[in-house]
Image 1 (tube, helix red, strand yellow):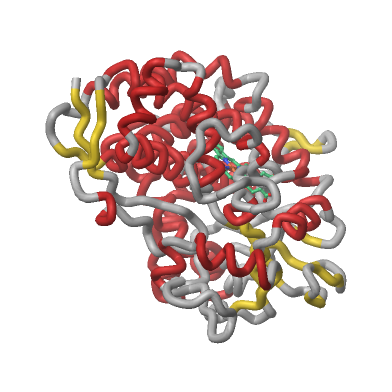
Image 2: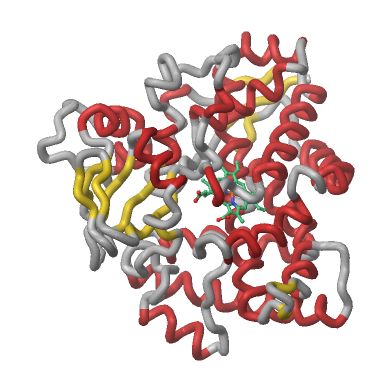
Length: 418
Ligand code: HEM
């Protein structure tokens, strides 16, 4: 938001508000914590929910808010946009709902398959292999010259890690970078349907690939997440191939863009603050405080949609059954009631882990232990390897991308020195 802090004529989907939503969120938190917005093509009324209390209420009330949004809002919802569904059907794929699109009790069964492999109790088993990926990536980054940290590190690290965990060879990781980027064009309601249709071609190719691998892992089970999906059982029945495919798809997407953005925001913060770099380099116990505050201030995935299941009043607004609400986790992590001066990066903030960047409640991010592991190892390794880092261009030239669902950076130009 530029000049005013008035709701009259307020538009959320301007390039300025998409790139830097903080002022807009602050105004909405103060004046309209549940606020109607125009979403292109939406068949149902849509609201953004920025107030922390309202966010918590939605997260707690799974009987009133479903995780499965209308297809006109998030083109991956229940009825699935018919134009897109045709392409999947023609290739023999049926879109079913599993992770991130179902409600308890079913959602709990699906997420357990993920947390059994990469939850807090299992993440240690992946530690050495993640360390090796990080070492290889850093060895390829030259020092003393400008590099785009996003392409050199933030993109390939989560990509390779999710391929490792799923059991996909690294040689195919580039395709899955493209696949996961294209998926955002498919679902994001601000992108035109023609763009969604072209993105669908890539997603269908990825579905073909993942189906083949799932079948292989059914024949020969292995110690990885695709194998866990392929051989999962729910209530004593084997998972269908469509369910396994859906879980694989969600994990590819969820494991990629999010951790990428956290790594980029963290590096931008360090490159802008040499004193902070020196302080953390000298006291590694601060690394965890550092990335927790990055997650709080720069929520990598800003929102998820929910569908209203029964009429309910929230934040002074009457919501009707079928309406859509975008739960703005990024705004909840800036709530003034919880965080003094929320825009400030404060590594000494006592309650930084009270953020809701990973969501909250029964749908709390199933990959959060993996994301934290990657952030912890990555920043420790970078601090080990380099003496300093600086921005290679003026700070005001480094801007967040103007997109809705993510707080994403495409270019973080830095110079590392050793
Ligand atoms: C910094 C990185 C990450 C952030 C900020 C993040 C954020 C989120 C958010 C906001 C949700 C939605 C919570 C809700 O709707 O209540 C979510 C759900 C989920 N995330 Fe993440 N995520 C990250 C990394 C990952 C990774 C690495 C994976 C897996 C490999 C993953 C897998 C999932 C899954 C499966 C769900 C669905 C959980 C459910 O509905 O029960 N995420 N995440």
